[in-house]
Length: 52
Image (cartoon, rainbow, N blue to C red; front, side, top):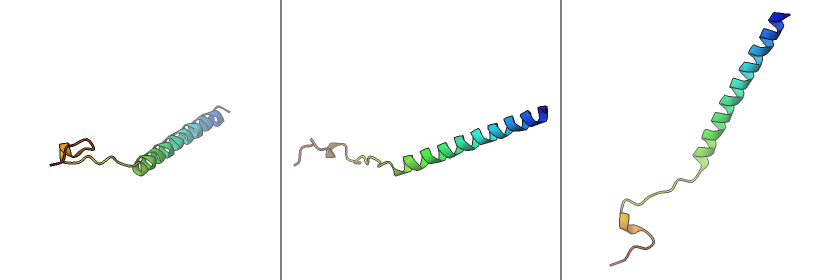
């Protein structure tokens, strides 16, 4: 009977680890889809920069 409960606990731990891994993978995919802000190499090229 104890072996049954131990195997159940091991199964639960494996399931939790799998869910955690899937969540991390999903977060990486979401981060990859997020638009990246591109900064200009020229600091004075912003919207409020003077021209000429």
